[in-house]
Image (tube, rainbow, N blue to C red):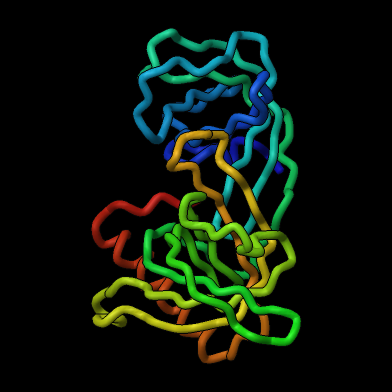
Length: 236
C-alpha cells in the first residue's frame, strides 16, 4: 500500500513508543503531507512536551473505515512547544494489521456490562462508558474504582451488554437500546496510577440476532450522515 494514499490531511494517527514507565500512546491528526515527511498535531491539548527526540523511531497506526495500517517512522522535528506539530519521515510501507467487516464509529454513549459464569448465570450489571461501536462489536471504558475485587475483567470472559445509543434524526429519533452477549477480546489499562485510572475494553458480539446487527449498522450510518451534514466527518 502506497503510504500517501492513506496518510492524508485530516486523518487520525496513533503513535506508540517505549519509555521507562512502559508503553506510551497518543492520538494525532495529520496537518501536512510532503513526499518525504508528514506533520502531526495532537488531537487533545497537553501542557507537557512529549518525551521524543529527533532520530527516534516510533510505531504508528492509521485506522480507516475498512482496515487499520501499521508503520514505523523517524522523528524529524519535535518542538518544545506542545501545541506545535510533530514532524515524521514518510513511512516506506504501510502494513495491514486489521480488516473490519463493519464500519466503526466513535461516539460516547451509555452502556452496562455483566459477566456470565460457567453455568450461564448473569451477574450484576456495572455502568461503563461506550466509546465506539460497529456491527461486529463495541469499545468501552470502565474506571478502576468502580470495579469490584471479584469482577472477572479478563480476555475471553463472556458478558451480557446493555447499550443505549443516543438519538439521531432522521432514523433514530429515540435512540437505540439493545442487549447482546459478547466476548471480551481487548483489555488495555491506562498508563495512569491516579484514582481515575480506567481500562479500555473491546468486545466482539456473540450469536447476535441479524435484526439487532442490522439496527446497529443502520445507526452507525445514520451517525455518519449526521456528521457529513454538519461538515464534521473525517474518514478514519
